[in-house]
Length: 235
Length: 128
Image 1 (cartoon, chains in turn brown, yellow):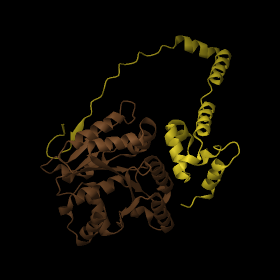
Image 2: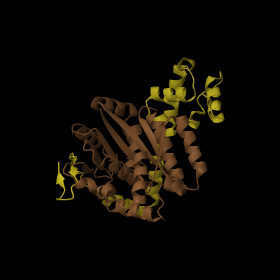
Image 3: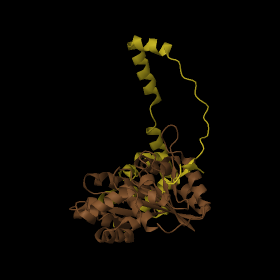
Image 4: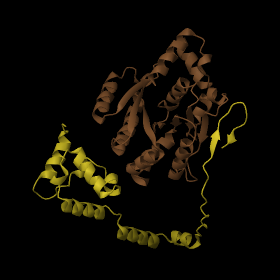
C-alpha cells in the first residue's frame, strides 16, 4: 500500500518546506520515495530538494494545481494522485504551498465531502496522511485555527500529524502544553522538528545547505551533521 | 467524555422538552457546516460531538428545524431587487453606464491538462 503525505499549513513561513527538506534528506537514498512540489507560488521545494534532482532516478516533481481562476481544481488533485499511484513509489510527499493549503479544507467541506475523499483513498488502495505544520509566536493563532478547522472536517477519517516547528516555539512552553492537550483530545499525533539554533555556526551551515538544496554528504562539520541527523530521526 | 460547559448547554437544550431545541446548535457548528453538509452528516456531527444517542433526537423535529434554518439563511432576493431599484433611480450616471455595458463573450472552457514536471538539475525540465 502506498502512503501519500500532504505537508500543509495555510500560514506562510510556518516551515512546510523545511519539513519537506528533512523528509527528503531522510529518504535521500531510497528510490521508492518521491517528492512533489505543489507550491506554485514559491517552488521552494523544487530548489531545496535539488539533491534529489541530481539523482539518476526521477524522484522530484512539480505540479501546478490551480486553474485559470487561481482556485484548486479538484479534478487536478485527483488526477495527480491517480497518476502517482501508478508510479513505482511506496511513499510520496506532497509539499503544498500556503495558498494551496488554504483551499484544501474547502475542497473537502464544500466542493467535496470527506467521505468521498475517503472513498477515493480506498479506490487507490492507498493511505493519506495530513502533516500539519504548526508555528509558534505570532503565527500560532492562525496555524492553530487551520489545524482546528481541518480536524473538524476530517472527523477522524484520516490520520493527521501535527508537526511543531520547534524553532518558533522557543519561550512558548504554554503553547506547546496547549497543543499537547489538543492532540490528546483530538486524537491526533504530535511530532517536533526544526530544533536548529540559527545563531550558531552549525545552524548557519544547515540553513545554507537547505537554501542551496544540498544532500547529506554536504554536511562536513561534525556539529551540523549531528544536528541534522537528529532532525532526520524525528520526521 | 467530559463536555465543555457551552457544549453541555447545547446538549441540555436539545434533550429538553421545550421549544427551540436546536437554537444553540450554532454554538458547536458553523453556519457554513449547517447549510452545506448533508442533513444526516449535520445530525451525526451534533450527536457525536455532544455524545447524544441518535434515537434521543426526534428526526422529524430535526428536519423541520434544519429546513427552517436554511430558509431563514437564504439571501433575501426581494431585498436585493429593492436596493438595485433605488440605486438605479438615484444615479443617472449608472443608468448610462449600464446601457453602454457590453458583457464579454465567455470563452469556451477547455479542460486544462495536468502537467507533471520532472525536476532534474542536469538537464532542462521535461514534461511527463
